[in-house]
Length: 115
Length: 110
Image 1 (cartoon, rainbow over the protein chains, first blue to last red):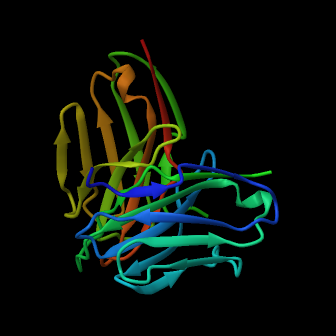
Image 2 (cartoon, each protein chain N blue to C red; image 1 turned 90 degrees about the vertical axis):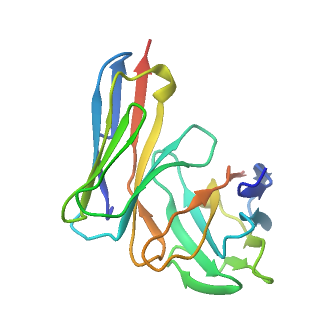
């Protein structure tokens, strides 16, 4: 399977705990994106990387959220001190960099439930 | 406020009917993509359009990008139950992040 891979698929955690999600992009793609999606809404942009550089972060990404892509390959998204409002589907996507347009391919997502 | 407005929000039709979903914006995009998403899964890319006025066909699906590159439509001919899902449009500028509409939920009844 050469698609975008996310782990875990599902995570249930107690409020206040920290969680970390992993994303493995398509191997030749140098751009990696994180999105969050709640029920009935389209995905909301969180952050993206070009290789190991984090190029943009959304205002949605509070201080409790941090993302890394240390070697320009896989990426992790950590949420500290989780809150019930963090419950959502967290989506990762990757794309090859083209100056004119973005063509992003998504993983299956990580469903986070904070209880 | 959604940068991309999709309509209708929800559509329930009978198998065999035709339908059109719209994606509108006041902003110009360098590309626009359509995705289909099933419950509990990630969005799956259907098509990318980059040229104003461009029309692309994918079997029973026809995608059009507006001349001004601000809007797009998705037309499905003879809908089937397998077309059921959430249809999302997403716009991109200059190779950067995509911004998504809220989606259109399509239900095709047999």
